[in-house]
Image (tube, rainbow, N blue to C red; front, side, top):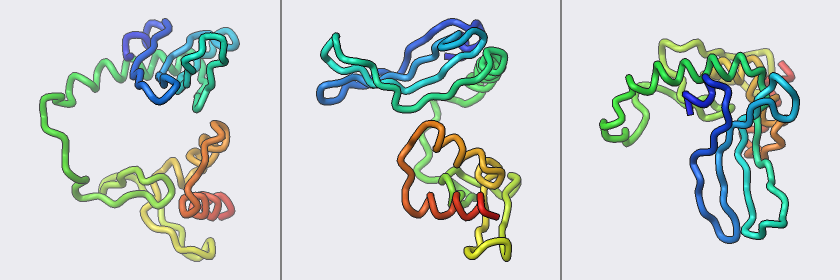
Length: 156
């Protein structure tokens, strides 16, 4: 995937089978407009005449996708893919807005007094509103508790 992003060429990966459909993650360069790429989770029905459904997608300038691909190519070899998966996250809290891990040294935010609900340990993306904007753009259903947290942050 990193190579495809860096080179700006299309790539499909992570195909899973479901009842009556297949789901895949795909990178589509220059789609739908020139110099803008789309990373999407798409659902393809078994019927070849049926439409492909974009479940989630993100459109960004091709330069940003290339930068992301180069970062992946540098980071992935350092991950130690042979290491066993962790049973649980250590020394961190989960962001109440998106459930990303927030570690002691990371930049987290606390909103107390600025809103009805005191929120602690927000990740940077939730605190600045990026998570809520992305979920709304992708038209992703949001858990009721998560929605309350993200909308409270947006109001503050």
